[in-house]
Image (cartoon, rainbow, N blue to C red; front, top):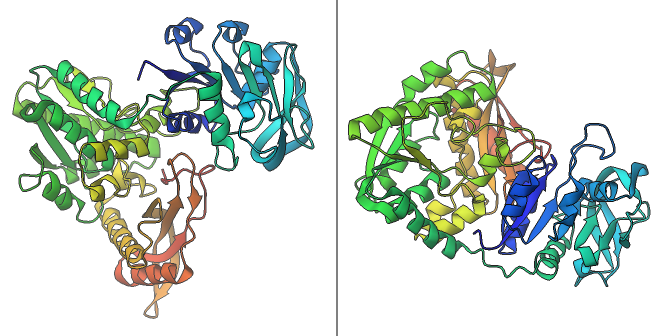
Length: 514
């Protein structure tokens, strides 16, 4: 992956992961770094190109996220997006100021087709704008290559220097030909060959794991979800009998899921794994008692996971490595991969306690996005049913129960979620929706059932369509299906008397509730 790389420099933009994901769709490896990263470190990576993300600041304001002029003088092509474009102009002598007309949403952009960035792009193309400032005057050496009715410099370039600035967001799907623009930058401007492929990654990773582990013993944290399952099978192929997979049933899984995981990965399953199941439900409930704050819940669940693994490791004997199914969005959203604010800590990233009783932690999927993980799963021969199963967070129902977690609440949301998933499947929608689940809100309200007053909880149904799980739109489920779910949940699940459907997209919301 280090032979050919594009570096994304993050200025706090909400689409930073999406930029990297789009580059990888071009079969070029890409990583995200904070704008505070030393230029010497960037140069040492020998990237084929650099992309500057959007950001919330005004580049001319005091204390705004910035960069040195030297960034544009390293001889490496640079593409600035939105804030990145404004910053490029500002640093190199142009003028950026508050726009007389704010542009937000889908805007028609007129492009100069002689620009290599807009090769095979329509002269009139719809792009996603989101800016309060605009480039009033381009920096010396640049020429304007795109404009809109209200934005005279929607794009500019200094071709000889390999510097390109575009005011809109090519990385989002709302920009109709955005992928083509990024493809042009990666291939025509940066000269990439496109060597980033999953089969090569899988083969290289297995070899690297084998070399790293040597004769050591490995303990794998297996949740039964897509990420940990792929990690477990990868480790199994790499080190075989040196691997022990510990499945911690923390009591926060979906209905019957503990037994389903054991059926697949246990002794009667198709995989050669030393499978250990730990039933720790009451232990987790006890630790979570009285805790309502989402981040605190995540930290507690993460730390307790590690403690259980340490205990199991001592039973097994000397264990050198702990394997986790951390993926790249986990890393970035935990504030470790770029400059964006911590959205949520993940139990296997930001939630790690200070002391872990293992020589080293192996995270073979740490550099991959979710769809790339699925591709690796198929490369490893894992059945499609497992590879494409519904995503499920490490903290489980602990973050699908708003507020304090109790055994009673877990039972409620398990039953409601099972009904929801069953009705979605009956309606033939289970293959078309990106992710769907039920969550228990912390709201209680008055109801009437059987002529008696109730004061019970409300459950929220969530369903989104997404390509990459970084942005998502609400799924349009037929009203009749929602009505059936509502009727069944209220009649079959004790303690729930209202059902809501969550219409929020991502952004501004996240897919999970906490």
